Image (cartoon, rainbow, N blue to C red):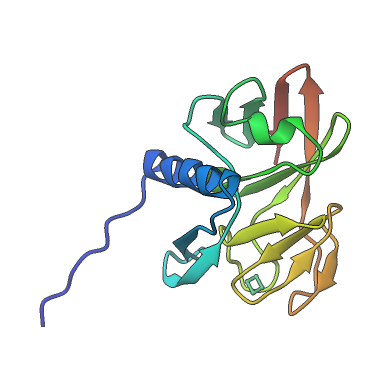
Length: 164
Ligand code: FES
């Protein structure tokens, strides 16, 4: 039996998808996209309102992620309730009000899904099995039992630096 190889998703393709999600969300249209867990196996669909854009404005350097809020990619973090999933860095970031941005690992503490996230009503939801976390990273609904690890965030004007 002939095996077919899955084509890996490039950063550019992922960010293009995230941009499409933002567009669909802005139009109020649910966006369904396939997702994978940390093992790379396909594990279902997600209904995600993550915003992104192109790769301009988000730089990943080792254990640091630098986000330029003046770009389309960083724009969701400018206002309260805005959030980003930066899948290549396994980072979730959210504006919790005013100028305060918090960041967490996107690796779910239940079984490690890292890119199946949604955010609404101040809750992150991992759609792999439905665990929910608040904007402090605390578990509010299982099956996860451990909080998300929080990362250090520094902000200088429009530049946000997350250190893992
Ligand atoms: S991996 Fe997130 S809820 Fe199971």
